Length: 257
Image 1 (cartoon, rainbow, N blue to C red):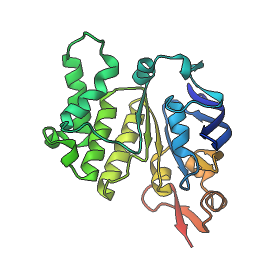
Image 2: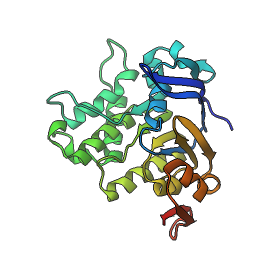
Image 3: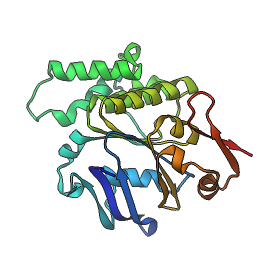
Image 4: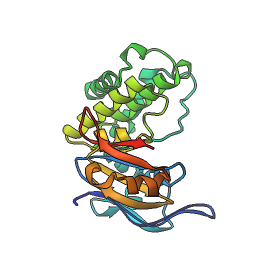
């Protein structure tokens, strides 16, 4: 499997609490990868390490064969966009002001705002469905509206890789599917997308590649049709189920007993 972004032999920890040991992950280029697993299994920790927000005790995350720790933060931010779970906007900032921050990695200390920057912001806001919220303060928005504003900020970054940690949080079901269709469309346009998803059926329907984690380790990785089995669901989630074809998409669908 060819993947320019990969984790090799990672040991990840917060203080004395070790989350993962010997973790290996390959992100397939140009694919939509969904990371699934029970709560506190290490999904978010893995993503944080991949964007150099958490330094591994052992092993390395590499981008084009180079350890990301040796790259400048700005250089990483030009390549990899990251949407974490917990976000706090600056007080009083508007939606458009927040989205404009996604352009920071592409601008020098003395460079002014360009038509390219403005076009990227407008396209990102349209894609995330927040154009009508442009002048609203982020702190005044509902959870779902704010989540879409943060997604627009990451899209404005215009990076080849997009890593999103539970991006459907706070979104109603209609907006969840709109976002997942958007991520699939970005994949079709050539970007590499990685998203932590709680809904395994959404993961199977939209992703090309599924990484299933348990206790800080990868249990299985591959196309949904190959890896999503009753045995995997039992191992990862401790739940008995049947896996049947989705009546609309034909992708694997988990039906609990």
